[in-house]
Image (cartoon, rainbow, N blue to C red; front, side):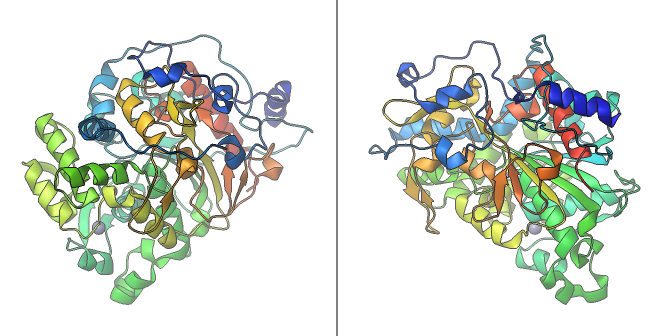
Length: 504
Ligand SMILES: [Zn+2]
């Protein structure tokens, strides 16, 4: 079995998978700047950059002079970009599959120089959705799959290939902390415990939903799990791995023996790997853009503005009466009790930054990164996506094929600079982006140890971020949104084959 795998890998020595290729369908006209001569980013259209090219080199750019464009346009763009939920729940599910033949072969490792023999070990894969998303146990799954989107259920496909896959649902707009607690409760089949210290600090209930059936009944240090997070789901899975290993001191202090298993730590080896896809490890500067625009409209707090915009949009889209459970039970407004968007706005804005929008801001992400520890015994992989191209003027603009909902935000991020309240410099290194998240944010949490994804399993290190080459595609590409089914499936098969071959 392992010999077959090795042969397959060595057949295509320099091939890097075209996982994130753009959809072939025509998109709305992109700004005129796209037709300007392009520089290095053009190389991302076809083949990916070779291993060994660092993000910094790949993103070398010239200083920018211009700031944002006119207010109203920007405001609309921010709203559009924030509606991740609309992207996936609305139009996306009605797209037809776009199959392109030719399932390309090739490993996620670029090159396999010598035949190494590894015993593949298949641990359960746990797929954790991003902002506004859902899992298989959500009513939303009746209308379509978040994982797989326009290509159909990814989990079903992977199960058909023999993989054990589970797809939990965590609070679509909840904080990283709350989502990690909910994830743990679902995996273990226990009552959600948000922690005594945390719930007191953020004015919400300590306990939430009780899950009768564990999603991973045999979960232990022997039957580990592989965590895969898309977008904000990446922060959730990092938090879970960190809590499993280290627990939480404040919670231990607050409740002693009554503390949830999750906060006791000592379970580092229950997690085998963490993979993040287009995750905003250093936040998204869209929050800063929203803040700038908000000031024009007399709103001073960027994060509050985002909460208002998103929940109001959900309300006007009729989502509140639909199947998307906002899962804000900890604030007393989840499930059937949720009737009005204004309830959600009020509760979440009083939660002292205990929600997704704060964790998604660069300042919030920086705070989060201090709390989340990279676990020495766990493999970490990150995949950043790019849907923009660098123009002669130095700004980055959306490529043709970018989802129409992300063109404006891709163009905005491609030319936006600022310094956040917390002093984070959003400079030209943030221009390259996938429409919602910058490549520099998706690569690895700032300051964390990292290296380029190794050429083979033996080179892959634990406890450091193994950063894959920049993938071509927008923010929806990793979950198959508007992407080719063949390429989407191929990406996951190759990713899982790579992970299964890692040294235990
Ligand atoms: Zn909370």
